[in-house]
Length: 64
Image 1: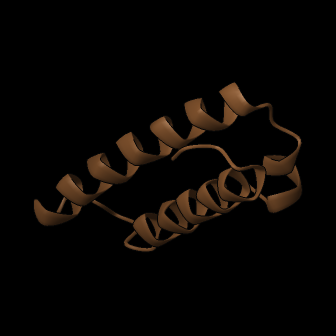
Image 2: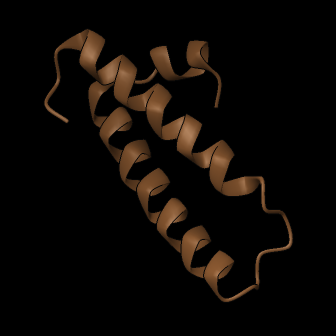
């Protein structure tokens, strides 16, 4: 998800997307440790997405 897409989301949607991203990241980490992850770049991409979401939330002054 790009930054301009993230900035267009409402506050509730930001929280929802952040929750989804955390769950996805956790799932990817489990799959990576059990060697079931074909694309090892995926956790890095999700982690950057989480950082983007948190940055926009901090800019808006929302609790994280």
